[in-house]
Every structure is written in structure tokens, then in C-alpha cells.
Length: 286
Image 1 (cartoon, rainbow, N blue to C red):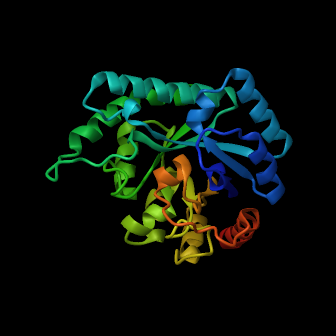
Image 2 (cartoon, helix red, strand yellow):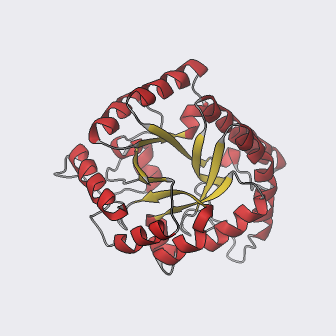
């Protein structure tokens, strides 16, 4: 299992130059740098090529993640919005394909964040619209050596899937080997009964894993049951990326969107903490 980290651990805004993080993450000893898929989709072909070459030169793999804005909601009641979302997912797949393909994860199946206003809301029509849209978008993933990993998030951020079981049902409905489940320990802490059981349930459908503590600190600073998680990953012979996604700093787009309202980084050297978390994670996974 290769271990990575999300660039936004260090920044306040989503659209940034990724090249400094190629250097930083490589120097810290990680295997993978995860970047914003939306930013990559908007890069020129030349800029994408330069990023991929830089990562290759430093021995880093790249992975990609995004949460769809409301204008790209593929579960929307509005057909034009759904078409925009399908087009955006295809653009992402093609852009990542230009870079050799790889995993694209996140809230790809609907808008983020999204909470229905009606307490008696029936989510089934939204799920059905999303599946139909994804069946169209996934064709581009298939053509570009890209996997779309559907991230299971908590009830306060999205409603289409909150548990591994719901994600499995969704992925099976899409009917593509390029559609996988993505779990995240922060969200699992809220929604799953047992971490290990969810991972075992996903089995070979688990395409990507985000890790972080219950308080969004790096692994090792909370109460997530890492021994249980490591054992379950080994039992299913998981071969995908394990990417830590800590968020410590308030402010900017990242602090606003992730709801970081108190500074968890006071007195910490972010690089040093990332390196410590890497060593901790490798110990869990071995």
C-alpha cells in the first residue's frame, strides 16, 4: 500500500501551484501526492505534462479528488445541470488520462455540500438520476484508464451515500469496473458501526482510502482504531493508495469548506507532523 497526503493540508485555497508540493511531499518520504482534480482539469495540456513529469522525476504517484459544485450536480432535478456535471466529469477523466490515468475520488455523484431542505425528502429519485448520469460519465473514465472512486461522506455533507453499504449498491448499479468505493476514516467515525467491518464489506470494490483522525488531525492524534483498520486492509489484500487528509488551519476556501473554525496547528511544524504521521501510518499498514 502506497501512502500519500493531500496538498490542502498546507494551504488556504484550492487552486494553487502544485509543483512546490511535489518537492515537499517527496522530501518528506511519501509515495503519493493527491491534488485537486478540478484544478488539473482546467490546466493546459502543457501544464499537466509538466506536473506529471515533475512527479515522475521525484518518484511520486499522483491521485486526484474533487467535490462537485452545485452547477455540476449530476443528481440535480435540472437536466442542464446534470449535463454540465457529466461534461465536467468527462473533462476530468480526459485530463487525468493525459497524465497516464489514475484514481479520481470524492463526491462525484452529487453536489458538495448538499442537504435536502425537506425533512420528508425521498432520496431515491436523486440516487437514480445520479446513477444514470454516472453511467454516461464513467465511459470517459473507462477510455482514459481512470477510476472514479465514490467517497462515502457523513450525513452533514451529503445524503446520497453515507455508508459503505450504500456506496456498494451505487457502484454495482453503475455497472463498470472503473467505478469503485472510496472510504474515509473521518466520515466512517460518524456513520459506520465498525471500521473493520466496513472495509471487509467493500472488499475488492475499495478503490481508494482517505485517512485522518476523528478531529481531522493527522493519524496518531485521535481515537480512530488504526490497528483494526490495518488488519482489515491486509485481510482484503488492499493494493490501492492510502492518502491522509488532515485539515488543521482555519481561513480561506479550505477552512471555510471543511469547517475548520479553530486553529489546530498552533505550536506545530506542519512538515514535521506530516512526517511523523507517515511513519505512524506505515507502522499501521505493515
